[in-house]
Structures are given as C-alpha cells and as structure tokens.
Length: 417
Ligand code: TTP
Ligand code: MG
Image (cartoon, rainbow, N blue to C red; front, side, top):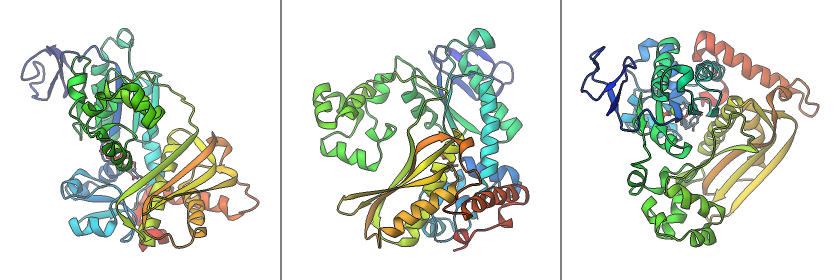
C-alpha cells in the first residue's frame, strides 16, 4: 500500500518506519496518491501565533479572548485538555483553567501570517478557496506532473514549510470532494493528516452524527432529531423527495452529502453575498456582558473572514433568537463599507441596544452583506461618523503596536473588564 513519511515526505511501499529517516510517523492509505481535494486548517491559530512569539508560553495553557467578562476566542491544545473551548464565557474557562494566560490577540499579525501561508499554498495550485484566515480548500487535481509529486506529498511539504518557515502548524484533510476534505482535516488535530478515500466513503459516513455536516449546528441537529434523524445513515433512509418536502433545498443537499456526494468546485474567487457568524447557547442567557462578549467575538470572526477574502460590507446585521424561538433581525446600512472588527461591533452593538433589554436569548449572530472589494472600504470619509476613520486607524495602529510590543502594550476598555 502507498505510504508517505510525515517527517521527510518520502514515498515508499508500506512499512512501519520511513526507510530514509527512520521516522515512525508514516501515513498509509490505498488511495493516498489518487486524491486531490484538500482542506488545510491551522491548529489553534491565534494561540499558536502567540506561543510562537513567546516561547515561555510553550507549556502553559493559553487563551485568546477578552477580559474576565468576555468569551473565549480560541485556546491552545493544553487549555483544551482542561475543557476550555471557543465561545465559552471567560469566567467559566478560568474556573476550569485558573492558571491560563489570557491574551487579547493581535489581528494584524494574524492577517499577515495568513497571507504568508496563502503564498505558500499558491505555489501548489491556483485553485485555493479561503474560508477564513486560517483555513482554505485547495484543489491539487492534475498538478502531479507540474510538481513531480502527488498532491499528498505536496501537502505534507506545505505543512512542514509552514512549521519551519512561519512557526505555525496545520492539519490536512485529503479526499475526493470539499465536504469530506473538511471533515478529514478536523479528525486528527493538531498536526494531523487524514484521508477519506472513495472506497470507504459510505462506511465512514454512515454512523457519524449529522453535526459533522458543515452548517448544521445545534439548531439544525435539533430540527433533524425531531424528524428522527441523528446520524448520516438515518438521512439515507429518507426518500429524496420526502427530504426536500420537509427541509426544502437543504433536504436535497442533505440527501447528496449523506452519500458523500459534493460537486462544489474549489473556486479561487467564489462570489460571496454575505459573511455571518452566529452562536447558539447551550443555556439561554440574558447577561448583557456575556452577550456583549459574543458580539465582539463574532464581529472579530466576521472581520477575519472578510479580511481573508479582501471584502468589505455595506450592511451590518444583528440576529437574536429569544427563548421562545422568535427571531429578530436588524440591519443597518453604512455610508461606506467596512471590514474592521471595531466598526462591525459598534454597528451591531447599536442595533442590539436599540432593541432594549434582550431577555433570555438562545442565539446571537452578526453579519455583513452588500459586499464590495475591500480597497473601497474603510477609507477616510464617513460624514455621518467623523470618528469612524480615526477608530479604524486606531484599530490598525493598535494591532501594529501589539504586533511589535506584545498584547499588554495596549488594552481596550472591553478587554479590561
Ligand atoms: P478555528 O480554525 O475554528 O480554531 P483554531 O484554529 O483556533 O483551532 P483548531 O485547531 O480547532 O482549528 O478558528 C481559527 C481562528 O479564528 C482562531 O484561532 C481564532 C478565530 N476565531 C474567532 O475569532 N472566534 C471564534 O469564535 C472562533 C471559533 C475562532
Ligand atoms: Mg484552525
């Protein structure tokens, strides 16, 4: 069977150790050199960057996020062993992990590193579709002649270069379509390389919970559960027309995905209509500080995604779902488009405040739409809000100072609470 040394990228026939470097980190799979659709996702991205620049943090649990009353943006794998997760209220994270080092984060630096990683990916293929700053699909089908090596080898070299030249690790998923590649990259984190071949697709998917389908969160899973669907195999028991009748176009998509079918191509400049992020809470919350913490975290995520795609939005949206499942959405058109977290947060926060006390809330979401190329956004002029340009400048300057002197150099009020 085809084998690849994760250490030195040597290709050989199945063996326990690499014949060249003797490493036991050997990847084998019957279809390893036949697959070309990949998904790469950096490991604990923001936290890894901070650890890279502060070696004394290497063995410590590191959390990126706002202050005591905020929520966790992300955390390193040491903190994850202790139970800390993204979107968890910070006080809870600190209960689980009192010795954690909490860092505010340095957005400009993450954007810069993301660009370096992108440049490395561009050496492999022009078909790159970034999903966020730290993850992208790549289609390496048909590149073997150009590179003199199959996609699996080139992808392994990519993560090695990322580690050696940038100091950041990532995990690879390799399969025959985007749906499966994305699932695979998450299977063996950190520093993983997982393969889902054609032959095993049906058996692999059958027992998995519907939650592994991208876009099915807590709410989607609950809706499906009410229809008696918990696993992918449950979906397969449904008629395609019944699924469509019950769930609309999503039903059709589910029918195909349940069979491992996904015909979406990896497109470098896929037009996107909107960028949004939302969170459903395990328990309803009406705590304004927690909700505000999520507003900030989600705004940062939307901003990161917009920056990864060089887009800016003319409209900011806020979405709230109350305990009784009533959904409220509010939108606000901006005089000029933005991709800045601070601006998105302020607009979303204003919409939030205008709604009055939220009451028990199940879900909160932030989005931007009416997207344009970023160069057009965040320019100096905003007649209705002369301060906007100054704040956008301040966000960039603060990021730049943090990038140089560390995150303690500047702390915004929000992070200090
Ligand atoms: P993820 O890829 O979801 O998470 P991660 O890279 O930190 O960890 P993993 O190893 O599981 O991939 O997100 C990438 C970055 O996006 C993350 O480092 C921080 C940022 N982010 C937010 O700003 N807010 C969030 O709620 C989440 C989940 C991530
Ligand atoms: Mg990641």
